[in-house]
Length: 210
Image (tube, rainbow, N blue to C red; front, top):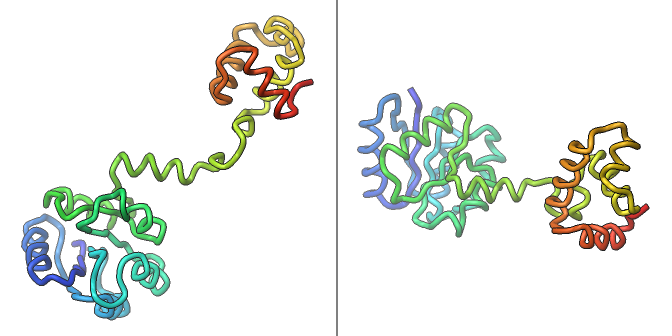
């Protein structure tokens, strides 16, 4: 049984969530909180598996409250249930340590499913938000395009910029012309260049020309 703690400053919302979750298999509401201070009391008390948290409550709230929860209980599993759209707050809450983000317009089935997924150690985010997160976590995001190239692609780029043909490179590296053409296609896509002239300009500008 997954034990759920509900935190929302509106009694009618808490009652609604309790009714929704009481009808969901494998879920049981074991506590509730009406403000940030009560949330922290419940966090210290323990006895719950997933916290369903509203973003705006009296006392500590939002990202600050999530950080406090995680500081006290690093393994706390928090599902934010907010009236605000993903584009406004979701990324900030996930960075603070939340395991999922849903709007209050979500269906009971989606809310229950998200709680189960989070209790099982997963995350619940929309596909659109997942793409944003992937971009944020991309280790190459702040690097120059040529730093995305593999060692072989960089080698081929230098040789192309040095005036060698695909056939010349293939012979020198003891590879097939098709393999070199594939490397060339991939590196041009990564660099965002469309032809040999643009490739040469990029290589010269970046100091990669032999």
